[in-house]
Length: 353
Image (tube, rainbow, N blue to C red; front, top):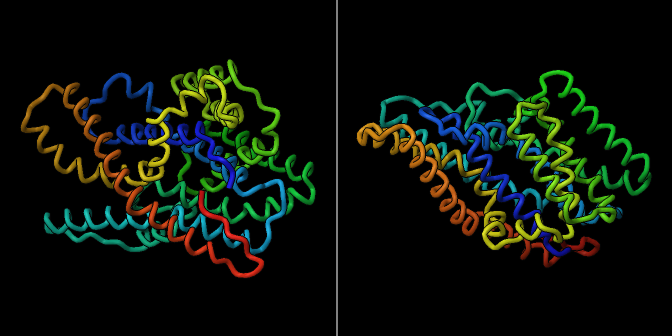
């Protein structure tokens, strides 16, 4: 196992919090002025996740050499243990709450095909009439990239220049299509797997050319670029080079941005980021059931009520994520590590990052 890249852990944490902030725009009521600037287009942080994932997977699993059959099996098992247990827990938690609320109002809560598609992580491929835990669409899309990863590595080792060029052309083709059509990367179904794969391949390419990176002032330029691209009404695709640049420039954990991202607070936030991402909708659903009635009774000014809501939702999500990371994510990863410590002959163990 290679050493953890602390700056990338911090990036994951920040991105997850921004996604939480973005989804608060769908909560009814007054919105504070800064929310539109900070969170209005924070769905793009999912594309940062995809770029980070492509780089980190390549870094941890040595994308510059051919993987054995045992390593491929271990890789796929590690990915399954990493994403699926918490996905199932979050969906079941949200389902139980929804059924309980429906029963309290003497309504029937139907699960049906939409629920089953989400359980099986098919929701990035097949449109649904009813969305459950919406963020899981990206897990569905990323599972596709995981399945393709061993094949991409196999081809890249055999024909590195040709395959890397094909990856770049593939990513640029997708982003060019988005630029020429809607200009928006807010794609949750249909082309969603391609959205993920484009970012994932950019991350892989960063890994292949990582040794050419430099730190310092350029990191701050990349951060400023990201802030401007998120705040201004520009084409979504313009933020992708900034994401790629920041990942490329911080992988050595040196430079001003990397030092900030390596702080203890952001490291903790990065470690619980997957729980933050998957749990914030179920937690928000439960919290809102209590809050909207209390808000009406308190009769607070809209701005104050909104500030209290944002404080509550972020605090509740972080608290719940700390619990699920400790009692759902970590035990599942530990179970995989114990299992892979005793590999079969010819099947070296690879633990989940």
